[in-house]
Image (cartoon, rainbow over all chains, first blue to last red; front, side):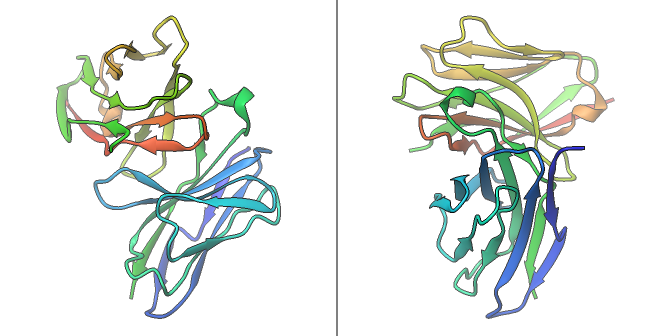
Length: 116
Length: 113
């Protein structure tokens, strides 16, 4: 079945450590997104990519980095510069472009990141 | 300024009754889209319903309907005949010209038997 796979489901980070969250989709979507969700809050956009080899910062990009080398994959690295990384991270994808603006974003099941 | 405002942090509804979740938005873009998502306690985001700014009729999807009042900039979600499985957090989101989604803070719905 087509969908978005995020791994791992749970991740623990030590102080000063970089960690990478995986996001893979087989929906043939052009656009991919990373969101952060804090307890009881809405989603905030970290980074997004509308095409391979291109990505833009969202509202809270500081302390995070991404790459988009393949259409299917959009990994997120939480760097040691992100001082408060404990949150729920959601990856999403959608059909890109203005013609498909009514198409929803499809989400993965998320990764819960905690500090050790 | 907040682009999406959901003023109800939590709501209780009796099983089989209808519930309305409020959403107001702020944009100067004439072309935009409004989405509602459901997030159960397991965390995944489930798309429910979409309303485009130029759509003449209110959107409906099964037990979900959207009460779209463009002049008031509101897009309230109505869930009819509530079921226990409807207990979740519900988010309103808006897409503008840049295709990014802006989310509200969400409303937690608890359905009572």
